[in-house]
Length: 103
Image 1 (cartoon, rainbow, N blue to C red):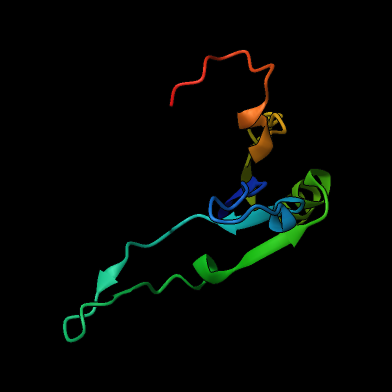
Image 2: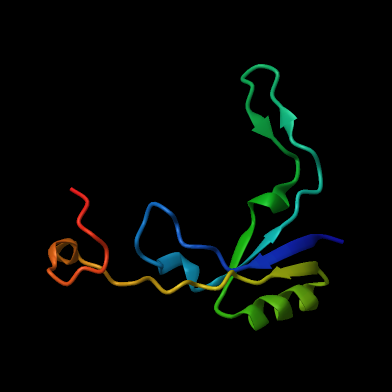
């Protein structure tokens, strides 16, 4: 019986947008070890399920799919998003700064 992990991906560190973080993802766990190709040195596996990545609109849809297909699953809840304080470059030069001017 295959096992899978259901999670919501985090925001990419190199991007400012949150485009690919709204959906829930189901990925299958590794069932066979990876092997090294003796000629080229590349890693490979005979497990084709590692290439499958399913996206769902909600967590409940992903869980319902796993139950319907008989997949053992674990749900990883996303970390709480921290609110960013909106600062602009011009705030560094305000007269009413709370921190002292250092340079």
